[in-house]
Amino acid sequence: MTASADTTITTPSCTLAGRIALVTGGGSGIGRACCQVLAREGAQVVVTDINLQAAKDTLTLLPGGRQHVAVAMDVRDRSSVEDAMKSAQDQCGASPSLLVNCAGVAIIAPILETDDDSWKKNIDVNLTGSFLVTQAFATSLLESGNDPRGAVVNIASIVGKTGCTNRGGYTASKGGVISLTKTCAAELASKAIRVNCVLPGLIDTPMTARRSKDLMRLIPLGRAGRPEEVAEVVAFLLNERSSYMVGACVEVTGGYGM
Image (tube, rainbow, N blue to C red; front, top):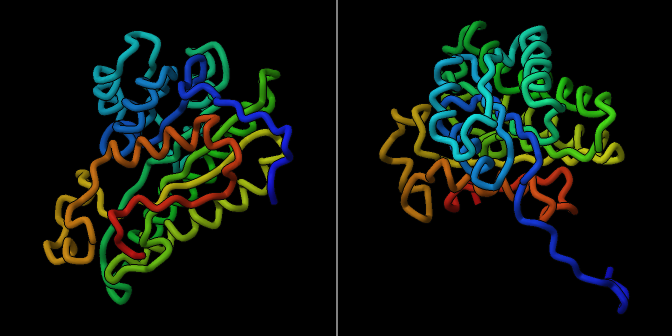
């Protein structure tokens, strides 16, 4: 399909000034990097984490001073999620219109050695958490009476697409996040809320500290990614520059899994 001759190309603002962005898992790793990049782009950031002190530590790294807030949130628990969303709204004076679902765990074990608790924790944090927070976020935004335009970015994983040995619960949860992203995108686009996701590969975070050296041979760039390299893509997907992207899953992998 081609544009008509009289189509006017406009350049939307590249900043997120005036927007409130809530980030789960903002106390470390990719979540912390997302908070830093979104704050740099002008957003007021609500840093949420199950570890409130870690969220407060992230606040000290953000430009913009006291406009940013830290809130405790256990993404597995509906009451905790709803309470945190209300706290964010009360402290910021409006509902967040941007969301990054980054809270995650990776409990590693072969399928034959994976116990029920390990499987459940992977699913509860990574998949159910993304569902609960997205639902609470969208409900809050749509009921606020403010401009309903919003954007959600879920942090999935390339192994949610490819699978990976010894990570059955983790890969299943991240595969679920990919599917959840597409379903939410289809349902919420008509309500002016865009939903996309990012599929990181090996990123240098506390979660990947015990990675195998052999893994590097599978990455064409020959190195682990940096959290900020994921965060820059997240910021783009939250920005109006990606206004025609809905249900997209963007790989940030250094070439792993091509």
